[in-house]
Image (cartoon, rainbow, N blue to C red; front, side):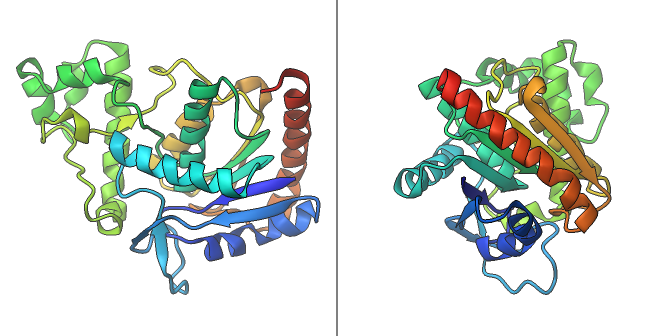
Length: 290
């Protein structure tokens, strides 16, 4: 099994190697890992331990559609040069980017680029498609929604929205904006978090929410999250999980925070799911060519 591994925001492949070491040992030599550093130097990310000296990287300069297309091109070039890969392991931003990439590739090719995926604490999922939610976002920028914009994100903005899809996206946006308190703006200083104040649709991240996006990841997935992680990231991880097919996903939690679990008991509980989903994904690809 050849595995692509993607690190978190403001982290690095060398740090992810240390985070994944218990799983690499437990999975054995059958699983060979290839690690990719982000192309964008940045500050220390959420949850990165103080002893880690850097350098630190991101896969994206920001989260607009154009910036996400750039990040996906970098990832796709790496996969074409070093792949193919049977599976992908991602942590935080790396997990989110993997989901974005899989959804984008499925849309383009009607097939998945991997047999299975393991997602540790994914953050928000962002589409590279300018047209995704375009009409909804343009409504928000119109004069009719001036009161909504004045209340968003810290006021009672939900009272200004009647449509269920609008309410779902607004709540998701609020969760993402809350990450500013975790230092996201310092990690990526060029990221504009005043999505609606600019009144420029091209600057608004196209957050992918299962209530607004019909497609689902077609391959088996394993989802792992920390019970002590930020509530905002916990909700984002839940959104990411719901973008995957329920019948072929397994969900685990651990008592840690925003990190890859390292306790022997956690690793022993999760590794059988990884092996099972890897085997099922291989069978699905052989049978259906997904």
